[in-house]
Length: 88
Image (cartoon, rainbow, N blue to C red; front, side, top):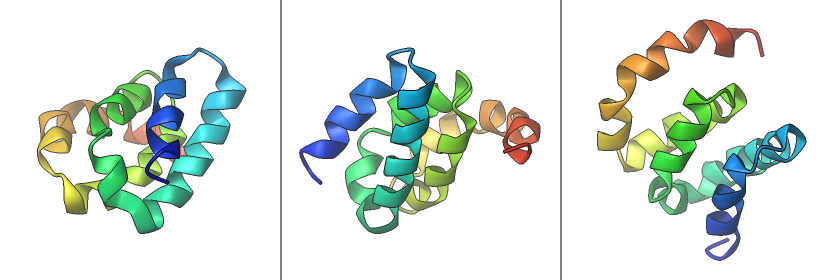
C-alpha cells in the first residue's frame, strides 16, 4: 500500500475520466484502513475533487481524522461542491 498509493494519486490528474473514476474507488477502499498514508497526499486529492472528481470526496472523512488542516484550508470550496456530490 505504501508504494501503490503515491502512484495512484499521481494519476488522478491525467485527464482520463475512466481512470480517475477507478482510482477514486481504489482510494476510497484504501482510506478505510490506510488513512494515514493518504493524508500526506491530501492536497492532490482536494484538487481533484475541486476539479470535478466528486466521488473522491468519500475519502475526506477518513483523512480528516488524521490531517485536518488542509481540509480546513479548503472548506468553503468543498462545501460549495456538496450539491454536485449529492447527485452521485
